[in-house]
Length: 63
Image (cartoon, one colour):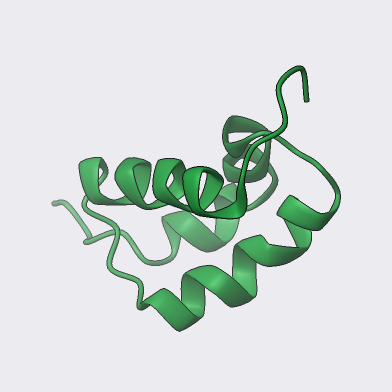
């Protein structure tokens, strides 16, 4: 990462994205899914890409 993220700033960016995409996850689910990505020093966008399949499973189905 070019500029180190604080965990709260990083977590906030993840939560903002999930909210915009209408993804329903609890804080504990987000923490469990994304904390390992933070520890690998991925950016929020990289972390979202790594967890894309899990995120899509929580989206409301659109028909």
